[in-house]
Image 1 (spheres, rainbow, N blue to C red):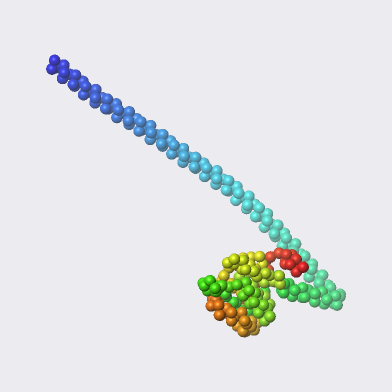
Image 2: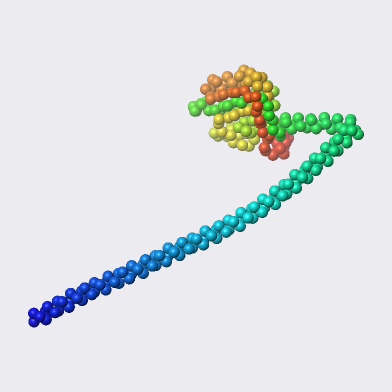
Length: 255
């Protein structure tokens, strides 16, 4: 009986070891299958991303080629228009030259009206103006009661115009006869554009005259009394751009 028990025990241990080896083998096989599946998924994802990037790059290249072709066509058209303008300008000058020789009186009348029109364009703010002048900088002091109001800017504009300013702008907005200067919350609207402090008022004109008129004005005293942040400087050369709005709307405001 003892021998049989020993054999049974040995067989049981052998079976247990075999089962353990079998389980480990199955576990290893499952791990390998899992790793292969994960690797396949990763490889597929990389390949899909690569195809997507390649397709996107091809589409972008098509757009670039399309835009390049359109740009070349536009440049060619621009060159044609420039040539046409140059030809028209040449013929215009030739006609003026012949007119000057054959009908001096009519030519002088034409020249006078042309100069008058150019002057009117300058006064209307439709041309860029360069020259000496002054720049006034104005800002809120940080106190609630010390803010730059639209009425302050309006008074400054009136002082500069009276002193002979040829062109004026506020933060780059050209002041024209129909320009509005209106308070709009924390901003001030000029030519329909919202402007915020600090304000830069540039004026082309005789610098000493403009500066003297400004510093002797009532608004200057108000600015000082209100403790606003201000500064004014003379410049030998200033450039003020033309009015960039719709001239048609500017004209309709007059009626």
